[in-house]
Image (cartoon, rainbow, N blue to C red; front, side, top):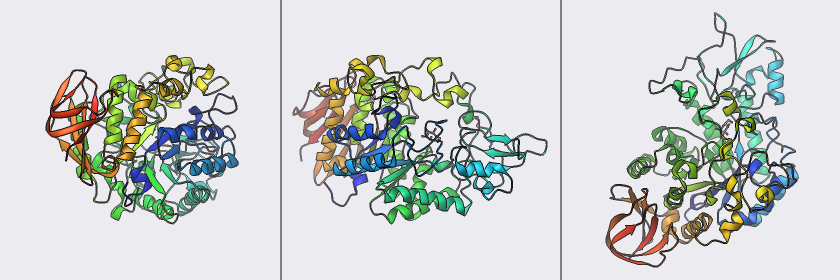
Length: 529
Ligand code: GLC
């Protein structure tokens, strides 16, 4: 494998949602010792790094994305010693550990906000965004919360409103205040000193808001029944130029620690997303690219997406692709179980760092959550639109035993009905399972520099077929994916040999003139020189 590439360029990232990965103490909620106990699985799977969603002290209004102490571990998840043990065990296995840093907002229970709220004269007042009511009363402007309703909440005692891009329990920090910057960079330093290999930075595009508090304009494309937050364009609340100066400060800090990685959560159109590589490449190493999630599952649309992304990347910008996370409906539910396998081949053969979401390697699907069991505050505040995120956060399915091997207690979210068959133990023993496919794809990516770091070139195809080549050191691989359910065929200029089919049954097949694809099949072909 090319030594010229860094681990996070060659590597594969795996997201662990710690509440749902492995419970070690029977309280029904996953924890850090649980994650540690499953590191051998991640090594067996073949990934390079795990990104762990927040495990910091938190009242859990947004399940850990409301942090009340940036340098601690919530007792439910364990202790700092458990974190240290996790990092040591991961590093001993050659696995990197990435943390989820939540800088846009703290919990309303964070001592900074408690002090800020206490009085207008508090030295912490300016650590958050406080404003007087509008002249006639009411919120200072029309800004909306991502989770429904106004983004301003009145504090009766001091007579001012505070801004929260998310829940009222998640007040936004004031990143224009140098003391906030310093304190937050200190928190990052704390984890870097303890061995963190980098961060996924939460809600990055939202760190700075318009100082003049201008109203956001209406979104002409919005229709009733869609996410109410999107009824406005987020012109004055997201992606302001000042955000990049903060990203650069974070990057400077990481660079002092060597090969650490800075990943940004950035739901932005491609032309704005690539700006986050920063001037001179001094920004995010990996501005998360969510466009495979957001683009309709159609071969022509996806071919156009890849072309647009490749064309937009700055010269030194390393690409990345994501197919799932804890905020998005499960891949297998979005595209169906058969296409989920094709999607896995796409993700793991594209140029750029792939990020996997726990359980997708089993083909786990969304689990319907009855109203009385809903946990996600978004679903509670904006019910019935399918915005709730519980369905994609259900426990990892390890085996067919009680609690799916996830917990000895009652799981915090229901287990999938099919967990007795869709689980690591069963699929690990089945050479044609989705898990087997993921393992083979990951192993192939590791073995073939063409896939890990090689050049990308599109191959003309029509209908439901998406095709491209990857090439390094004179070795050329063709990837052909049938995004449709019917048989299709792709002309082959030369000859080749099938390396891997999503059906796991064509290895070694000689090919000449044409590549026949079954419905819902993807194939990687080694082209003859
Ligand atoms: C990000 C997280 C999401 C969280 C929100 C507020 O989008 O991924 O889970 O609710 O930020 O922190």
